[in-house]
Length: 259
Image 1 (cartoon, rainbow, N blue to C red):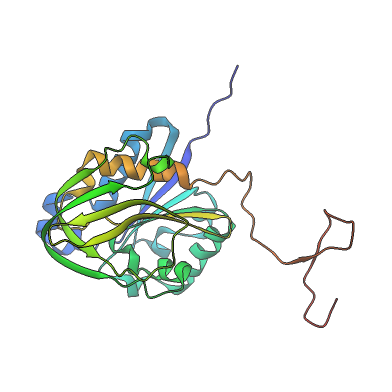
Image 2: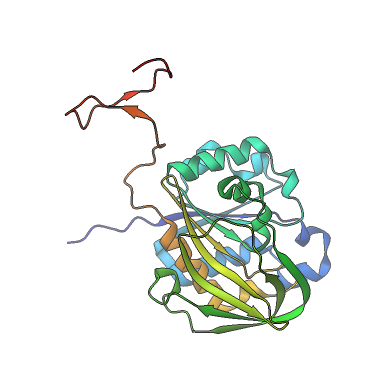
């Protein structure tokens, strides 16, 4: 008899600024973009996930030490208020990613503090918000995140993102997008930082109903499943000194002058 499967614990973090200040965004996402993203993950994964939301306006942005310690995968969407995210919260998220928490960074989250800290580059790109058609091509059909995704799928109207995208070469390129103006963009990429897995997925501007589209919702659900670490516990990578022939009992770093 098999035991019950423990649900993947997911927190969808939304900046929740456009929804409060722009009626046209509220019309598309009346309960907030974070809620629509949450519903898309639940729609595809059902009882295999337990999804909650947090926003910029919550105390500590809803990302306390206790919350992150009990989060398998954090999903991040931000745009208008990157600078308002507290640096100590960013450091906390960074530490948890290195220790094994999964992270999905969506659309304009490319310029978030946490993504920049993890990438170590400017994360800049070219863009245009003029109702471009986006065609999302699967370039690695063997990747788990591409499972069940049509090749290609079309987003009828979307903000254009184009190269050059100043990020490190990804561990895996899963999706490549092309746009009405001829631009191309690496729209689905994976990274590993420390013990954590990161998936960047670019479709999802606030002015368009992208997160209502079934293919996009499936990509996010697949990304959540992929980003959950298989490590049994969350631990920080550490520097340890080992004596010869003692493979299991390392001791902590005691300084550059100690051997």
